[in-house]
Length: 326
Image 1: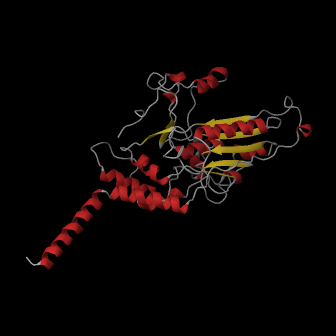
Image 2: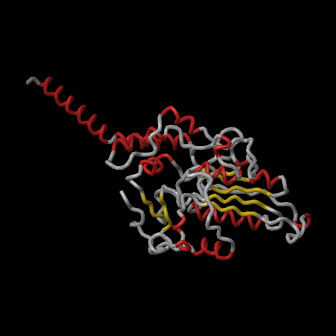
């Protein structure tokens, strides 16, 4: 065999080898590309300041004993009924929830309530409007553009003999679902209370659309500290435990497609100064203290315990083994 022929053979083998490796790693290559595109298209600045609206002078306000009650609506994301220790707690209350339990014990615990929908965003729309999402065309959860085809590709690359995946939807509905949101014509709790003289503030997740007229400031809120990305902290944060769910296509997508980012009143994206749940809690306390002499409505929409799963290294008994499937 001539030298040229041997060289050509080795080149052919190399090309085939690279192609074979690329085919095997196609999912990771696509996910890596998604992460790069997201970070380039959506730069995130270091921790920024949050300046809530200045309340009127206390002397100009009526005594709080004579005014309407304040309203604080706290929402958790993907929290199961038996995830809290009051209702038994998963794993014999390995992770106790005394503060959540105290709300039920010291107040009213409604044990026969039902969600307005079996999926995320439509149930939020029902909660914030008092109407079923089916009444105004909001029946599905909006997803990031291109998310469904990538998730389907991940699932097909690691297909098992398990039950069919409910995420099998056609590519033609992907853009349509991504554009879903709460129509501006709907009356929200914030709009209703604002008309009654309330100051209205939103903190955390929205997921009710980002189209024209759909954002918090356009749906009755005076201020909004908006969750832009689903990471609870930076991936390299030494005080945080990451738990990647390799068996879950959605989880694998989110680890690459989401960021540790928030924005205030429509401004630029910035990182929170600490773990997301703690940061939002701290800001909620500021809103309450700042507006304690006037009626206010605070919509505090936590992302926890939705994935991607990241937890602080406290309490001490929670280690890397928690949720470490896959």
